[in-house]
Length: 339
Figure 1 (cartoon, rainbow, N blue to C red):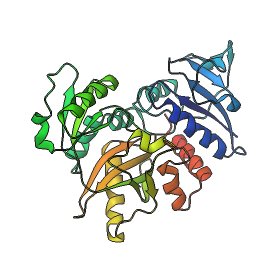
Figure 2 (figure 1 turned 45 degrees about the vertical axis):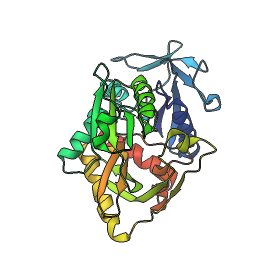
Figure 3 (figure 1 turned 180 degrees about the vertical axis):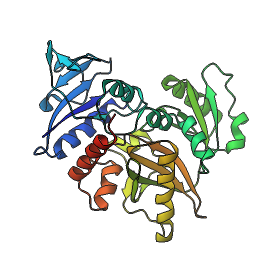
Figure 4 (figure 1 turned 180 degrees about the horizontal axis):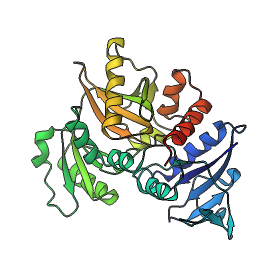
């Protein structure tokens, strides 16, 4: 049996979503093939060895503190004792300090295979500004945008009107629509910029794109494959509340309501974006599909959600791959790639 270490929680605003994803993975992982341990990272940054029954909505003081010993025989130690050696690490850490190459760099230094993209693929995909530039230079269409960096002179709403009467303001390095605002006037603009700059020193102001919001799951290393296409049906935009609140009226549709003649093109675009950003293991590619058949890539998520409502595992289930088989495949891809 292989020993798997699951990392969850983390220091980003997506801490709770990470825990929910982890609970689903633990429920579905093939326990006849894998032994697993869980290290939860608190919002304050402490690493704690937690049992399955200790996983609450937040990692706080439960479990034992863990220390890391690079270069030692046993990398993870609790109470001066090794907690075991691991064949693969499965980081379920959404957002900054988890999905942005930081944890991936640590695991590379430790020499432990891990699920998902490496340092460069993670960092490039996480930074929406960098990702857009790489996608655009690869011939992939993206929404027009401008970048505001903390310390810059902030333009007025009128000065960004060339992007349209409706714009989206979003932190460059954040997920789950945290800090994202739909802006239609000067008052909303001032609130949006102030809030988004709390989450990141870089903020994108993006043109509104008319079209269906589609998602495609990609899986693989050197020869990635794409799932079918799912559709998000929301109100003004797919905000954090629309994604996760119990009162949300947002729905998803698998397969998407798209003419079949466009599906192969959408899948090819998802794979092209995946390769352009150097992704490995897995990613969810979010796209806009316009009435004229034009496809724009919105963003690429290298550690997509694995909650009960998350699109990534649902898209593969639609392809005939069970949740458990998907976990097996991700672990095997991590071993295939090595460190």
